[in-house]
Image (cartoon, rainbow, N blue to C red; front, side):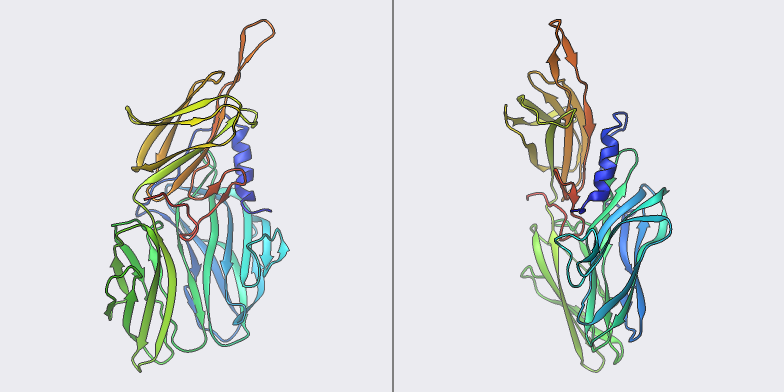
Length: 391
């Protein structure tokens, strides 16, 4: 499978370069990168194009992506999938057919992955990742929904880019309700914004927007297409928008909105500097500044990872110690709603022939993001895929 292959290449290069420094995923801010469908709404009954574009924040660099895009194959048919001349394709799969298709590909899924020939530094307002030409084959609607979307920043060490993902839609029949959600990670007890302004009716303007947030609160109805709502506990919520046009015609859409805890999590996998299993007992001590938080242990003769749950956002230090292990440390940033995955490649102290010690020094490579799966390094991007910390 090639899911996450782009990131695997980047991480392999980092593993060969001990001088690279840890570069954690940055927290959410007004300057967060955005992956979005352009145009957000399409209504043509002829052949038309949809792009997946990236607005890169000023604090990020970028050189690779791997993403899938859903569409309604009973309403639309793909005529072409095109990347720019500065990209080297790694995956090119339409409806489960093509190069590097995987188990999550199939009817109604477009899969594209590519490396860029150069490293691009933000800010960039509208970088086209790929373009899809569609032709309509039936009446109805189609949601263009990016998922499993990984964006890679290679500097100073490879890491996934925290980003907001925005959908698009197509309609050639009736009233079409549609909305997008922000921020990139909806957090409990913090306002979540809903934008239904791209909802469409061929019969005239939309006059009423009615929101059901799926949390037991009263529906919110009115003429405004832009609303906000706070959720009181972390959970996936089915949010429904009903719209009514000036003639009384109606449209409806529902989306799952995962709301994360305001806490984060760190999971660190223990490997040797030669990327082998570590048979030694390893104690991992977590500190927030000078304050001790908790200890975690990888037992002797066992492989696996050490996890720390329910962490306040901020900067932490992990210390690694144990018999036959080179003592070392790693600084880490915890982001609310994310599980930060790291792989620590630890140096082992091996007895030499003359009775002294031969030290194999520490190599640390951090794999951070909500959603990097240890071993496969498949990073789940989208609100429906990001790893959530337990509340």
